[in-house]
Image (cartoon, rainbow, N blue to C red; front, side, top):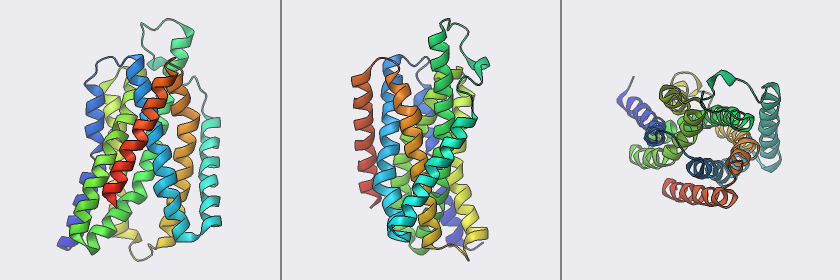
Length: 259
Protein backbone atom coordinates (compact mmCIF):
# COMPACT_ATOMS: atom_id res chain seq x y z
CA UNK A 1 0.00 0.00 0.00
CA UNK A 2 1.52 3.35 -1.02
CA UNK A 3 1.92 6.01 1.73
CA UNK A 4 -0.76 8.36 0.29
CA UNK A 5 -3.38 5.63 0.48
CA UNK A 6 -2.41 4.79 4.06
CA UNK A 7 -2.59 8.47 5.02
CA UNK A 8 -6.03 8.84 3.43
CA UNK A 9 -7.30 5.76 5.27
CA UNK A 10 -5.92 7.07 8.57
CA UNK A 11 -7.69 10.41 8.15
CA UNK A 12 -10.97 8.68 7.37
CA UNK A 13 -10.62 6.43 10.43
CA UNK A 14 -9.88 9.33 12.79
CA UNK A 15 -12.81 11.35 11.43
CA UNK A 16 -15.26 8.45 11.65
CA UNK A 17 -14.26 7.27 15.11
CA UNK A 18 -14.72 10.75 16.58
CA UNK A 19 -18.29 9.55 17.22
CA UNK A 20 -16.80 7.87 20.31
CA UNK A 21 -16.06 11.32 21.76
CA UNK A 22 -19.76 12.15 21.64
CA UNK A 23 -20.55 8.76 23.11
CA UNK A 24 -18.23 9.37 26.06
CA UNK A 25 -19.77 12.80 26.65
CA UNK A 26 -23.21 11.20 26.92
CA UNK A 27 -21.93 8.57 29.36
CA UNK A 28 -20.60 11.16 31.82
CA UNK A 29 -24.22 11.67 32.89
CA UNK A 30 -25.14 8.67 35.02
CA UNK A 31 -28.94 8.93 34.63
CA UNK A 32 -29.96 11.34 31.89
CA UNK A 33 -33.01 13.32 33.01
CA UNK A 34 -36.00 14.25 30.85
CA UNK A 35 -34.72 17.73 30.05
CA UNK A 36 -31.34 16.41 28.90
CA UNK A 37 -32.97 13.70 26.81
CA UNK A 38 -35.39 16.21 25.27
CA UNK A 39 -32.48 18.46 24.29
CA UNK A 40 -30.29 15.62 23.06
CA UNK A 41 -32.94 13.97 20.90
CA UNK A 42 -34.11 17.31 19.52
CA UNK A 43 -30.49 18.23 18.83
CA UNK A 44 -29.88 15.00 16.92
CA UNK A 45 -33.09 15.46 14.93
CA UNK A 46 -31.98 18.94 13.94
CA UNK A 47 -28.55 17.64 12.94
CA UNK A 48 -29.96 14.92 10.72
CA UNK A 49 -32.67 17.03 9.08
CA UNK A 50 -30.32 19.88 8.21
CA UNK A 51 -27.49 17.71 6.89
CA UNK A 52 -29.99 15.81 4.74
CA UNK A 53 -31.51 18.86 3.06
CA UNK A 54 -28.43 21.11 2.98
CA UNK A 55 -25.65 18.64 2.13
CA UNK A 56 -26.77 15.16 1.11
CA UNK A 57 -29.77 15.73 -1.16
CA UNK A 58 -28.28 18.79 -2.92
CA UNK A 59 -25.09 16.80 -3.49
CA UNK A 60 -27.14 14.02 -5.04
CA UNK A 61 -29.02 16.50 -7.27
CA UNK A 62 -25.73 17.99 -8.48
CA UNK A 63 -24.39 14.54 -9.26
CA UNK A 64 -27.31 12.75 -10.91
CA UNK A 65 -30.03 15.36 -11.50
CA UNK A 66 -33.18 16.47 -9.69
CA UNK A 67 -35.53 13.61 -10.58
CA UNK A 68 -33.14 10.66 -9.99
CA UNK A 69 -31.89 12.18 -6.73
CA UNK A 70 -35.41 12.69 -5.42
CA UNK A 71 -36.40 9.18 -6.47
CA UNK A 72 -33.44 7.88 -4.46
CA UNK A 73 -34.43 10.17 -1.56
CA UNK A 74 -38.00 8.84 -1.37
CA UNK A 75 -36.70 5.33 -2.00
CA UNK A 76 -34.57 5.69 1.13
CA UNK A 77 -37.61 6.86 3.10
CA UNK A 78 -39.67 3.95 1.77
CA UNK A 79 -36.99 1.42 2.68
CA UNK A 80 -36.78 2.84 6.20
CA UNK A 81 -40.57 2.69 6.51
CA UNK A 82 -40.49 -1.01 5.68
CA UNK A 83 -37.79 -1.59 8.28
CA UNK A 84 -39.78 0.38 10.85
CA UNK A 85 -43.02 -1.45 10.08
CA UNK A 86 -41.33 -4.84 10.45
CA UNK A 87 -40.02 -4.09 13.98
CA UNK A 88 -42.54 -4.19 16.86
CA UNK A 89 -42.50 -0.93 18.82
CA UNK A 90 -42.28 -2.74 22.16
CA UNK A 91 -39.37 -4.99 21.23
CA UNK A 92 -36.42 -5.74 23.53
CA UNK A 93 -38.51 -5.01 26.62
CA UNK A 94 -36.07 -7.00 28.71
CA UNK A 95 -33.68 -4.07 28.61
CA UNK A 96 -36.05 -1.76 30.49
CA UNK A 97 -34.86 -0.41 33.84
CA UNK A 98 -36.23 -2.51 36.69
CA UNK A 99 -37.20 0.60 38.66
CA UNK A 100 -39.45 1.82 35.87
CA UNK A 101 -42.94 0.81 36.89
CA UNK A 102 -45.48 2.58 34.72
CA UNK A 103 -46.53 1.34 31.31
CA UNK A 104 -45.93 4.81 29.89
CA UNK A 105 -42.31 4.85 31.05
CA UNK A 106 -41.70 1.34 29.71
CA UNK A 107 -43.14 2.28 26.33
CA UNK A 108 -40.98 5.40 26.26
CA UNK A 109 -37.85 3.41 27.05
CA UNK A 110 -38.68 0.97 24.27
CA UNK A 111 -39.01 3.88 21.83
CA UNK A 112 -35.74 5.35 23.11
CA UNK A 113 -33.88 2.13 22.42
CA UNK A 114 -35.43 1.88 18.98
CA UNK A 115 -34.55 5.51 18.27
CA UNK A 116 -30.93 4.99 19.32
CA UNK A 117 -30.51 1.88 17.19
CA UNK A 118 -32.14 3.53 14.17
CA UNK A 119 -29.89 6.58 14.58
CA UNK A 120 -26.88 4.24 14.66
CA UNK A 121 -28.14 2.56 11.48
CA UNK A 122 -28.82 5.84 9.68
CA UNK A 123 -25.52 7.41 10.67
CA UNK A 124 -23.62 4.24 9.83
CA UNK A 125 -25.11 4.25 6.33
CA UNK A 126 -24.38 7.97 6.05
CA UNK A 127 -20.78 7.54 7.21
CA UNK A 128 -20.11 4.78 4.70
CA UNK A 129 -20.20 6.96 1.52
CA UNK A 130 -18.77 9.84 3.55
CA UNK A 131 -15.74 7.65 4.22
CA UNK A 132 -15.41 7.03 0.48
CA UNK A 133 -15.60 10.76 -0.23
CA UNK A 134 -13.10 11.75 2.46
CA UNK A 135 -10.71 9.03 1.28
CA UNK A 136 -10.84 10.23 -2.33
CA UNK A 137 -10.28 13.86 -1.27
CA UNK A 138 -7.31 13.03 0.95
CA UNK A 139 -5.80 10.89 -1.79
CA UNK A 140 -5.94 13.72 -4.32
CA UNK A 141 -4.99 16.57 -1.94
CA UNK A 142 -3.63 15.60 1.49
CA UNK A 143 -3.83 19.15 2.90
CA UNK A 144 -7.46 19.49 1.89
CA UNK A 145 -8.04 15.99 3.22
CA UNK A 146 -6.81 17.08 6.67
CA UNK A 147 -9.18 20.05 6.73
CA UNK A 148 -12.12 17.90 5.68
CA UNK A 149 -11.27 15.21 8.24
CA UNK A 150 -11.27 17.83 11.02
CA UNK A 151 -14.65 19.18 9.96
CA UNK A 152 -16.13 15.67 9.67
CA UNK A 153 -14.77 14.83 13.13
CA UNK A 154 -16.47 17.91 14.57
CA UNK A 155 -19.87 17.01 13.20
CA UNK A 156 -19.41 13.32 14.09
CA UNK A 157 -19.17 14.19 17.80
CA UNK A 158 -22.85 15.17 18.16
CA UNK A 159 -23.73 12.16 16.02
CA UNK A 160 -22.06 9.89 18.57
CA UNK A 161 -23.99 11.67 21.31
CA UNK A 162 -27.21 11.14 19.38
CA UNK A 163 -26.63 7.36 19.32
CA UNK A 164 -25.32 6.73 22.83
CA UNK A 165 -27.66 8.92 24.89
CA UNK A 166 -30.97 7.19 24.01
CA UNK A 167 -29.43 3.70 24.09
CA UNK A 168 -27.95 4.35 27.54
CA UNK A 169 -31.18 5.89 28.84
CA UNK A 170 -33.17 2.88 27.63
CA UNK A 171 -30.83 0.07 28.69
CA UNK A 172 -28.71 1.50 31.52
CA UNK A 173 -25.71 -0.16 29.85
CA UNK A 174 -22.67 2.02 29.25
CA UNK A 175 -21.01 -0.67 27.12
CA UNK A 176 -24.00 -1.05 24.78
CA UNK A 177 -24.31 2.71 24.36
CA UNK A 178 -20.59 3.04 23.62
CA UNK A 179 -20.36 0.13 21.18
CA UNK A 180 -23.42 1.13 19.16
CA UNK A 181 -21.94 4.61 18.81
CA UNK A 182 -18.57 3.12 17.90
CA UNK A 183 -20.12 0.89 15.24
CA UNK A 184 -21.93 3.83 13.63
CA UNK A 185 -18.59 5.64 13.33
CA UNK A 186 -16.51 2.67 12.18
CA UNK A 187 -18.60 2.58 9.00
CA UNK A 188 -16.61 5.57 7.78
CA UNK A 189 -13.16 3.93 7.68
CA UNK A 190 -14.83 0.77 6.34
CA UNK A 191 -16.22 2.84 3.48
CA UNK A 192 -12.79 4.32 2.87
CA UNK A 193 -11.17 0.88 2.90
CA UNK A 194 -13.76 -0.48 0.48
CA UNK A 195 -13.13 2.45 -1.84
CA UNK A 196 -9.40 1.74 -1.69
CA UNK A 197 -9.57 -2.02 -2.21
CA UNK A 198 -12.66 -2.73 -4.31
CA UNK A 199 -14.51 0.27 -5.65
CA UNK A 200 -11.73 2.63 -6.70
CA UNK A 201 -11.78 1.52 -10.37
CA UNK A 202 -15.59 1.89 -10.56
CA UNK A 203 -16.36 4.69 -8.12
CA UNK A 204 -17.88 7.73 -9.80
CA UNK A 205 -19.88 10.81 -8.95
CA UNK A 206 -23.19 9.29 -10.04
CA UNK A 207 -22.93 6.30 -7.67
CA UNK A 208 -22.03 8.52 -4.72
CA UNK A 209 -24.81 10.95 -5.63
CA UNK A 210 -27.43 8.21 -5.57
CA UNK A 211 -26.16 6.85 -2.27
CA UNK A 212 -26.15 10.27 -0.60
CA UNK A 213 -29.70 11.02 -1.79
CA UNK A 214 -31.03 7.72 -0.42
CA UNK A 215 -29.23 8.29 2.88
CA UNK A 216 -30.85 11.74 3.11
CA UNK A 217 -34.27 10.08 2.89
CA UNK A 218 -33.32 7.55 5.57
CA UNK A 219 -32.12 10.26 7.95
CA UNK A 220 -35.18 12.46 7.47
CA UNK A 221 -37.46 9.49 8.13
CA UNK A 222 -35.59 8.63 11.33
CA UNK A 223 -35.87 12.23 12.51
CA UNK A 224 -39.59 12.72 11.92
CA UNK A 225 -40.66 9.21 12.90
CA UNK A 226 -38.47 8.64 15.96
CA UNK A 227 -36.28 11.47 17.22
CA UNK A 228 -38.64 14.44 17.30
CA UNK A 229 -41.71 12.52 18.60
CA UNK A 230 -39.70 10.82 21.37
CA UNK A 231 -38.09 14.13 22.29
CA UNK A 232 -41.50 15.77 22.69
CA UNK A 233 -42.86 12.77 24.61
CA UNK A 234 -41.03 13.99 27.73
CA UNK A 235 -43.46 16.93 27.97
CA UNK A 236 -40.83 19.60 27.23
CA UNK A 237 -42.11 20.75 23.84
CA UNK A 238 -40.35 24.13 23.81
CA UNK A 239 -37.09 22.56 24.96
CA UNK A 240 -37.38 20.05 22.12
CA UNK A 241 -37.60 22.89 19.60
CA UNK A 242 -34.57 24.54 21.20
CA UNK A 243 -32.63 21.30 20.77
CA UNK A 244 -33.66 21.03 17.11
CA UNK A 245 -32.61 24.62 16.37
CA UNK A 246 -29.28 24.27 18.20
CA UNK A 247 -28.58 20.99 16.40
CA UNK A 248 -29.20 22.68 13.05
CA UNK A 249 -26.97 25.60 14.02
CA UNK A 250 -24.08 23.34 15.11
CA UNK A 251 -24.35 21.28 11.94
CA UNK A 252 -24.47 24.45 9.84
CA UNK A 253 -21.24 25.60 11.46
CA UNK A 254 -19.51 22.29 10.88
CA UNK A 255 -20.66 22.19 7.24
CA UNK A 256 -19.35 25.73 6.75
CA UNK A 257 -16.00 24.54 8.07
CA UNK A 258 -16.21 21.53 5.74
CA UNK A 259 -16.63 23.83 2.72
